[in-house]
Length: 349
Ligand code: MG
Image (cartoon, rainbow, N blue to C red; front, side):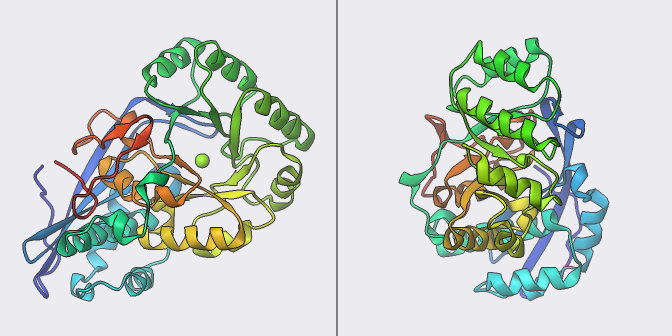
């Protein structure tokens, strides 16, 4: 892979280069609010004394970031700020001081620095973050809204997967689940992406979904409607998980009493450091944790996989739903990521 972008600075022998990239999806991806066929990424390299750390921003359109916003942000980053040994709390504060928002490109910088740190220390990121690979949860594979024929094709393609995540939020939701149940009996996760509106109908749906082997429901109602989400959480027989409502660390506290758990994603949290803080905070508050991803290559998903053993559920299917992942596919066995002892993320070209 050739990184064509600019060298931003050459201070303290640390350089940051970037490559805009378009990640192609295997199937057009449809959820309650939109559909798309590719996702803009920014791939990053941070080099220091012969070591290279890799990072990635996945900029799904609804989050408001793009190649241009990422380039604009990176122009303001002075890599001389990243003195070794890295203090990730200070680095997160520094990136936040440059501009609000921009969580995906901030995550790319944070991931590259974690990979670099692991390589310099000759330790895997998961070890440095205190994860136990024996506790790795299975990863679900997401099936977007589609015709019954395509749903069956996608489920059959997902044969190696032990859990399937389904995007709901349309009138045909029950048909979709029934279609899946004609071809597989694996447990299901459901993501309504804020698509449900009626309280009683939603609760009835929770009970129906429980009978169908659904183990959790993500973001049933509008992220701003705390009362409705809390009402459903109090009554639902299956865990209700806040996703769109939970972006960064301060949101974890607000999720208490509204959801049973939270969905942590590096592209929302601004990277591995804050995602880890969110996991620790959620545990403290007794909230369950799902670790998820956007449309991502092996780079960002391996970064999330390093934290996944500290979570209850994992939804790290990014590389499996794309066709031009520029890195080697992550090692996957029995539906789980197999963490390697390689230094850093264990990412291979
Ligand atoms: Mg979700």
